[in-house]
Image 1 (tube, one colour):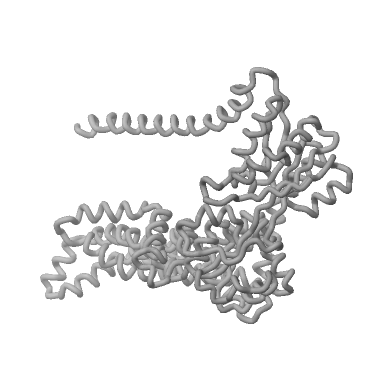
Image 2 (tube, chains in turn green, cyan):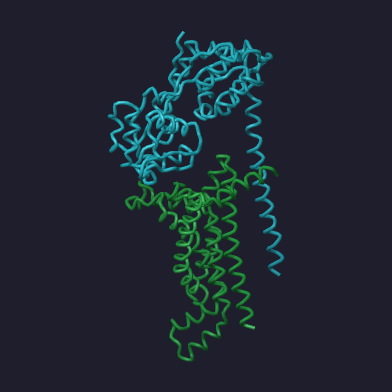
Length: 234
Length: 297
């Protein structure tokens, strides 16, 4: 157990002393994953809404794809995005590989199917009659959509939490497209890998604690919102 | 009703799949075991003396031993060699503890101390490999034409073009830091170092890839660069400078279990035959040798 105690002490000292490197790493993590999850919502919720409410040809297929996307191996995403953005790849002229935008793209690809699948489930749980009724009372399609999304807001929140939790914890894809460059693309997960390899357990553990706290905080927040909503509905 | 007929079939598929996975994992486990036991038994009808050679992981990774050891065992059939690949420091420690019969390492200062403390019988230069400074063909910092290594490092520190540092406490990283120190340049003391002195914190292969994408400079060992060259838009800009060389020495350990075996290995590796094997290694695969033999009697 000595190894944990020593590492923990060292790590804690690092965090408290405000070692600039460590907090830069945390900040980059939040910026990248935050941007990715916001974009994933913009893209994923409309897709989820379509899948959850409309009946159209190929819907089943798209649902399967969205559900598969939830289990899309991040390293595969990393590989494909890295190949696309590489100097020798089709999008090489953008010079994006090993930059933050590249990381946002990879995380977006991972998060969109997740957001779409979870929000599709949430939206389809809203009674169809409700929508028909609103429609017959003269609501425009846009108003109906907004009403439906509002009814499904708890499920949508869950999709945010699921998406954010998974991409901020992901290491394979961000290493491949980010490159773990200090102060630029080094995030908590890639830094933990590096510090562990170098035997610097203190720094690794400090970041692990911050990462866990962050994921936990998102989920606590979500649970509280859900509970207060339940109370309100009763 | 259909549920019941479908489920057992699914189960059967799952079990078969699991069995296949397990079978493969067993094969995976057993392969190295068989290859390692094969070497002494298959070629040895008579009892052989097994000598322990302590060396470094980078030497092992280069693939040199796959050629060198069989050649020695053929030349001196009474010996078989077991290679223990560890860090340079640990290899020397193995010598001090007499856990190894002979050392093949590349840290001249530590080797000198080892000899001075009376742990070794004799030390001979064997060969060197080298580091190279690679970068974009455009070479905006003028690394290629610089007068010497110190001038190279000073040019790199102007920060016009990114320089990737592994920053991972590896041997290559240590070498890079020494080059800066020798040139009295401290990259992290330059005003805009965060813009050009980029720390990858990763291995050589990945660092080369990043260097290529950023069209920057980095220090690499020649073997790793040659192995990855095909996927990189980088060229060797600096090679052969004395400061880039990595000298290997061989030392039979005094008082080890098989002293004669250790001496026989040293004699062979510094013989004309051994030196030729070293000089030829890599030519077929990379078009150039990875190590240069340099034993002088």
